Image (cartoon, rainbow, N blue to C red):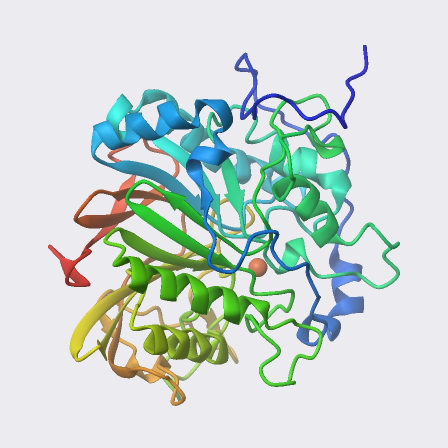
Length: 443
Ligand SMILES: [Fe+2]
């Protein structure tokens, strides 16, 4: 009997009852995108998108408990009893052709396996997707192959902020078929329904209040922003008329969330997440023969710095995707009269592609940076905080991977895991932040 897709279910569903073998082929073929890219190259630099204001008030919280539905209270009690919360995060999962499908599945399988094999206290309770779920441009017909099927056995909620590939509108897209409409149907539903994109699978649409939201879970708040549809840079507001199509609601939202943290004297970890990275590696000026891939987003960062300075609250770490590799920076700056160290982490290598940090230019070989390289030259001249130092602490630009994040009452630990090995051998980098002092400890 066909399912009535419009009927809300009494509780959310996150996975299938049975483990089934991995798909090896797409159900819907994905033609080559080379011609399409050529046609829209210029638009990717200028076509932003509008979006709906969140259903929730700017200072409201979307809770992990609510996302879990009737089982929420029990899940939250379990996390609190374990005295820690573990979750996954990564971006750029979608495979845009079958040749890439194995890479996407390798990450999806490993995070799924991690949930099944970890002991109860360190089992990941959700996946926070950092954007670019479906390539090339969030088409409804590709959601099954690129999202629902690879993650069909992941046993927890999957939250997401949209990336440029989930939002850029290709010319002549019919009304109602814009990628952000599809994203909203699948991630910002009002009730846990099964969407047409899930086809025969059972994961229900996530019930986020919008494309930007704050997830409140035990020990952590994750403030997620939508950094819009351009290839570069990330844009979270109209920037005083420079991007007239982008509403300014996210500035009010961020300000309200930071003010709430301050007012409540919130003692948990605060994470800020957006698809486009504030910092992405660029070689030192005048490096012969070397070019970077994606640039950072200095204007977006300046706006974030300004709002954080006004509120007197800075996140403990900033997470992004978009660049198809793993990069971890330490940004050291004076905030509220003392020096703090904030990890800025890029994790955009969860399936779509892995790109090297640098590429050859004019025939000369690329020069890869060392770990612990001072890259203060990447700090924006317009930075709205008193930046002292920016260090590229670690990176991985040859392996697919994801973040495994652990947070407890006093610290936040962010590990990068490569695919191909099991936890804990898969972890190749780790940073731990002391919540009270905003200092990186142990490394
Ligand atoms: Fe992206």
